[in-house]
Image (cartoon, rainbow, N blue to C red; front, top):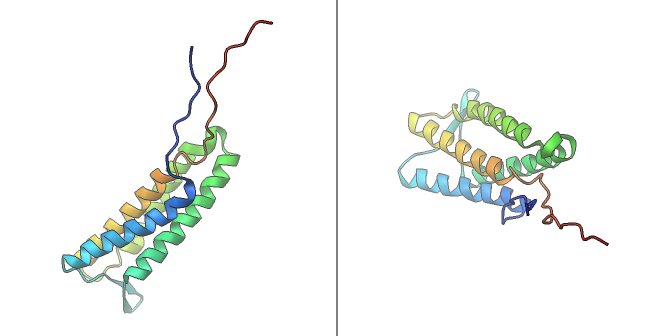
Length: 143
């Protein structure tokens, strides 16, 4: 007898933005512990990338991703899993343009690492959020 089960993450979708923020903080702390001074160019000026800025940016990206994932789950065929992963890839590539604005090679490497880690947490964490779990198939009982 075949069962119709969909695997789901043990974590609810609303936890993903917070996990992304925590991941950003961890990467930032590791980078600064290694002596990297995360700064980014904003026009002619430079701006330090603080741990709060990294966490807030990751949280906002995660919340936006959650919203987009919910819309895709309703509009796309099959829950929109493929469309979600394609959109995540495009968003990551665009976000890496901002990460490239670091003031030193070490700063660029730290910012790129943060973007990739946060993007991976959001993409993977929300990947199956659009699927609904279904109950096992029950054989028909003859009357």
